[in-house]
Image 1 (cartoon, one colour):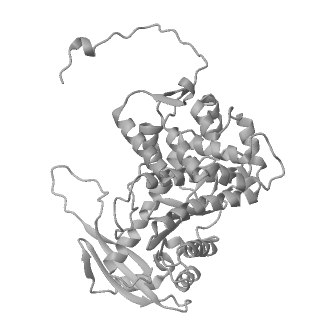
Image 2: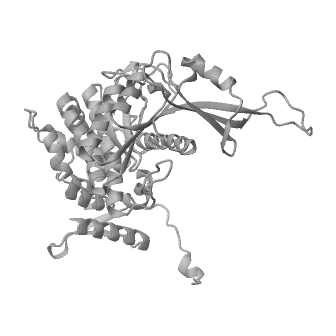
Image 3: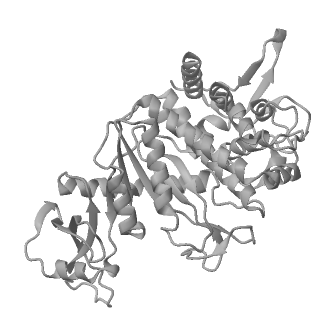
Length: 458
């Protein structure tokens, strides 16, 4: 439809007067969706059970503070001080069930006054949210990925230490070990550690605990595990095999000189795909008791020419090979094994979203317990956002060779820009509570569909 110039153009008045008045406004109208969802899941009651053993009964309970942190991260804030900029938001207060938000100092003291038992219970609740979804979907197979991620800080927080850190050398940090579920892109569990430990520190017991947790809930499901070369040792491989888990593990070349000799002495490589070739053998290091299936993969790559070149002259392309070795107990075609193992790269996307949109890399207080609670608040924000999308939308794909997530998830940052960060006014005409937003057909369609789906599930 063609519009007239008069219908389009207007004047921008300068020198507008600014007033600050008490009004029932919200900058996060999309939280109405999370209010329904939190009520349906009983998140507040679940968090209350995590702290009810504490003797102190403050006005703002620890469960309210943790729930505030979850909302704080969902709406896009990082520092605890950012609370001062939305403490008068009506919808945030209604989601939390309070008439007034706590001060920043109250939040900080609440984080510091919690104990290790509280952290363990919050960790268990976060794990339960993921398990409940897997049980509801009746997954035939569950793929678990394990890897660590560095959480750096410039302050001397309890439990931090100086360790390997490529981006911030010499900084103190935590180095938690994560277990993620490939089918739902959620964090199943976390093993919290200081920053000066090796990747495999405590990994064997943690991996076994995660596998047993999934097996108790889904006894008929096939469990798969993918880990990198930092976890390659006989203890972990033997434990996974004895648990009946199918696995793939990257093998570190530098630890076994025999592998280099096997690659150099190999004359016949079987083609796998364009630029890829392989051979396999049953082998074991000398100190091991049991041989396993080792896949040797060769990839043709173009070597970068770093010497000075003269323009307008022909420069020949030099090709070479990159090699990698995978140990596995999977009895499938090598190409499928390689695709399956390469799929663990999706875990880096989960870490990126946790650090970018859930502020997992932020260390807010000096106590170890307080920082753990803040980290689990970010993990809860991530897991609950994915749980909300899974309740609203059906799976968009079947199981792939790389075990991609079964749903096409939208990042929390995308949900903020499109749904959550919307201005609104809370009205009560004739005693009926109404959230009024500006007219937008796309927003209205999405919100009404989501609310109707949640109400139908209730």
